[in-house]
Image (cartoon, rainbow, N blue to C red; front, side):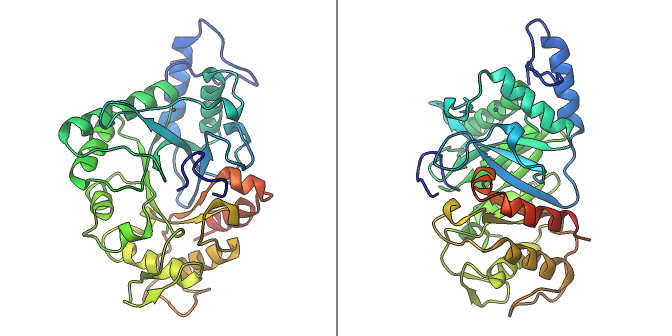
Length: 335
């Protein structure tokens, strides 16, 4: 996942659901209750579309959360930032996105939740160095994520650590977050290499939190060729790359509802691996229904497959929202 400003190509305290306005002073208690209700009732649909919202300007269309296309069911705010304390993260709005105050941002979160969406905080990105490699840093991570959920109203967390993770301590951290927020939405966006085997640290983490994991949206881009579940090697940018690699996750312990296909929204959203939205739809049909496959066809179908993810809602907007307009209705129409 591209990290902010890394290339041009490419956080529940005072939230109010005020009709058309910002929250006012002196409404903190009512605001907290409203946000807690919204965060507690947002439910991820059976088939869901995930999109990353950029808290920075890297040349893509600048959006506020309220501008995010309605097709997105899970909106991952990118990104939380590492602090000087191991494992701890924080979140600050970038002035470049145009918010006049944090209250405005929090109100947008609550409004999206009121519309049935989940808004989560993403940790990582291409250059996001957050290390959770012992019990202390795991506690720091869990406490800071829980704190951001309480402060901003986030429904959960996305793990997008591209510089490695330790499954033992990330599992400890995520279980601690789940213990404090039983309805937490947890998504992951590993690179292809991270999900080639259940022995990989990312895969082990996903399996270790399977009882509350929402979805793994592997990044099918910025990748070299990879093995599919049939042992053959597939190159990125094809329907076979999407289906044969998804099959590894589907056949090695994850529930179909925990598997999604992650792709760039446009050629500007990643260095390589872009596919037309129609290819994403074909891959989803292949996995869910056995139709639309390329040379690889799985031995069985997975009608419960969760859906798709894109980097990013901003690059999607820059491309006329072609990705969400094409993939969104298709995902929501899956059996």
